[in-house]
Amino acid sequence: MGMRYTSAVLASLEGSFHHLKSPSTRPAAQRDPKVIETVSSMLSDIQARGMDAVLDFARKLDHFDGRDLELTSAEIAASGSKLPDDLRAAIELGSERTRAFAATTRSHLADFEVEQAPGLVTGVRYIPVERVGAYLPAGRFPLTASAFMTVGVAKEAGVPSVIACTPPQPDGGPNQAVVYAAYLSGVDRVFLLGGVQALAAMAYGLVGDQPIDMLVGAGNAFVAEAKRQLFGTVAIDLLAGPSEVAVIADDVADPEIVAADLLGQAEHGPDSPAALVTTSEALGKAVIAAVERQIPTLSTADICGPAWRDYGVVTVAKDRETAAALMDDLAPEHLEIITEDDDWFFQRLKNYGSLFIGPWSAVTYSDKGMAGTNHTLPTAGGAKHSAGLSVSRYLKPLTYQRLTREATPSCALAVKVMSESEGLSAHAATAIRRLAIYQQ
Picture (cartoon, rainbow, N blue to C red):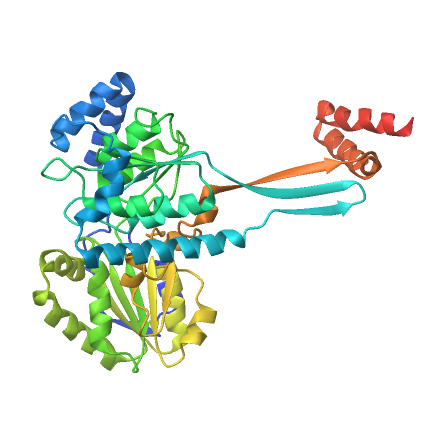
């Protein structure tokens, strides 16, 4: 499923909205049976043949030239010196802000302990996972900031070991900007591997010291499917589909800015949905016209053009209450608010991956790490039940309890009664035996 309205919500709001532009009849992006079959076959082969299979796929799919898979610590550290000064400075800023926001978030996740009754103490300790593997895309459009969101945030959570895989470039070497971002983020080891074989190698312990505990990072349909199939063998961050953007706007919004922001996310792929919900029909029409003007000016018109054509939607709501209800139904990955009363929507809306409030808050600032928040977010309606990647995802909130003799009567008597009603005599016995000792 992609970012789409549900029929039940549309029916409940019938008569209070209309579409100026609807998506085509093409289905939303779905799991491709051929992708599923290919990934299953690759994972089975890698499980059976280990590193031999990984290298076979690397030669076939990544044009691996036989060099060492792992970058040396010196190569990783030197990556920044190979970049233009302005790019290096931008990467440093994004890394700094993302890690700072993650560190602040971590500081608010505090261990605690509480005495619920005399002698009954319970608590939570936040313990980081031991080993994380991050996939860092570097294909046609390298996602330089991905390392900030995955490696850097994991390190701020206290993860001891974070390894990364990134596909080799046509010259056989790594994308230096991606490696430098990983270096600043605190990566421990980097391997030149792409796609399914990279994820499998990390999950099965074919690279690194041991199998990882958690797999994170974005990628194409094959990477997403590999994460889906590896889930259970390892934990994952989330299953994200095509990138999404939605905007709530009214007459105060600049249609050129709204159009640019819609196309900024449609650029991620030809199946990336972009939606505008507005209380102003005039603005809706102006945005549609602006989008059509802007597409031909973009170097990625071959991507964002089809995305807008097939998955773009513009909806006019009769009032802000309807607009908010429609947007909560869409539950977009990225949501911008550009209205006369942004705070009203901020207080009302509850389903989104990340929120961008006001005309100066561009989604792309978060995409590149400049806002400090994470860009690994739920898609396809997942924001109705899940949040994006953050330090909390790398932490296990482990509970514990410590009981003394004086807490025995209140716990044991209740457990005895409940267990006997369930027919679980062994459960009851653990309480009865303690109660007998207590009464001696």
